[in-house]
Length: 178
Length: 178
DNA sequence: GCGGAGAGTGATACACTGTAACAAAGGCGC
DNA sequence: GCGCCTTTGTTACAGTGTATCACTCTCCGC
Image (cartoon, rainbow over all chains, first blue to last red; front, side, top):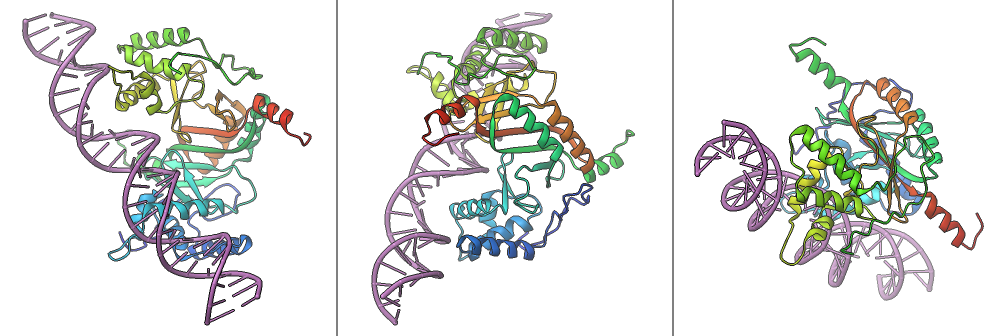
């Protein structure tokens, strides 16, 4: 699908209170990116914008090579290494996260700067990756780390399972009852 | 270091109550492996034992290619693919875990079967990876997942930071006070 | 405008990580 | 022994990420 379809498979609205839309408007993301770039004296170049767009618009989190392919057309080849550089930059800005268990990238969906610890919900059925936070989890983890004498710098928490929408579909389609 | 040096860099004892030694005796690990294999009618072959030994004995969590190199000698080459197969097998048995953020493998250090959710503490200084559990974190996370309507299958939680020993050393060596 | 410095990109090559496919060897029950 | 399955060997390949160097572009001071 060469056209930027921007459809979001995960239809369940967030029930908790971290207040943000998962499939944020690309325009808003771009605006934030420009602000962050100004702030640090960096450039929000065409390539970086295109890579960010690709991550935001993609239905399922793309890999770096997917993005490279997506941005390449006859007459203009974008090498994976360029994509990696752009992704590194966007990750430093906190606009993009890397999913270690999938080698994929997702747009950051929370107002960055508040809490550094996020939880990724990876649906093994539809492949969508949702992002949320869990203050309770965080405090519990903090206690455990303190007990172990470990000073955390950053952490990754990725949960694989079934999102509400897919679980609903599976139950509706299955012959055996819930 | 071709000899199985089995030194453990992380000297801090666990303060919590999940009661197990991190650098478990290889003999005990092997015994458990044999029991698990009998249980499922699988074979605990020489290769699998060697791969398990390599993971247990290694000071820092090795990658698959490290293990392959370690097991290879002039006259006997162990291909990475063989190591991957052995590792997959050992992971199914729950004897080995994979660290997604490092592409490395660690021996499972807890009495497997109790709680499936473990926390990996990755020291960015000495590279050692400790494993623990956090029931508080788990319950907090469970609430968040329930709120989001997400049904978890399994999750990975990897915290990078400084272990107590390394942090102590850093403070002792640094000119500026704590 | 001009020129230098640094940021950003292109391009190639390479290292590292993991898997597919098929053949060969070994264990186990009969 | 024979058939069947598990396990391993071997080769080739796909996927992921980095190193290096050259080139372009932008910004900034002059």
